[in-house]
Length: 91
Image (cartoon, rainbow, N blue to C red; front, side, top):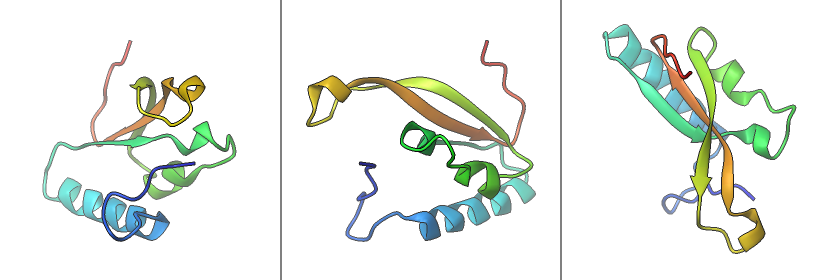
């Protein structure tokens, strides 16, 4: 399952889209932005949510360590999405 309960309300797709709108607002004001999120492709390879919500921005996938999981076998490296409004060399 995906962790989305950062507060009393659930941070669902509606909240993610609000965040992408805010990201664009900050971009238009000249901010240099980097957003990080667990990659939904970890659960569903067909999930293109971030590609749709952040069209025109740079989307990168990196490996990130996860040491908290009720199932010890699922701890370890997973894909993380990094979204920026500037070019990044991750090599």
